[in-house]
Length: 107
Image (cartoon, rainbow, N blue to C red; front, side):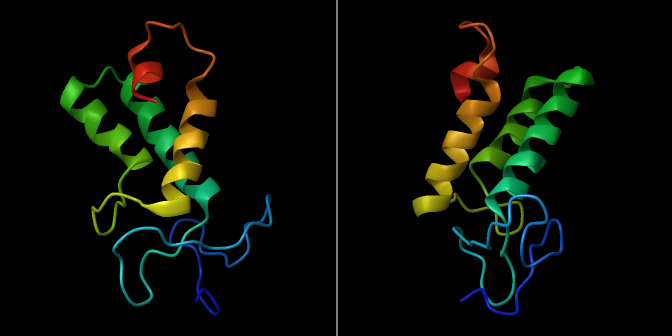
């Protein structure tokens, strides 16, 4: 039940741009873990972009790429519709890269 909850990333109940509602597809309990899928996708994209721009090592890049698959609060893998939606968002985000690009292959 998402009534009365807000996204832990943007702190809004209804996403300002997409008007999407909240989801929780991880192991968070209580009031933790409610989020918009688009906020999760944007956060993961920003973290991965920063890792590339700053030439971080492979361990740091992998850690940041896990945001596409894993909750930053409970550190559990997303499941169900949230996992599918993030997988699709990840694929769409990196689709234009060369076929041999490492991030595209992970996506």
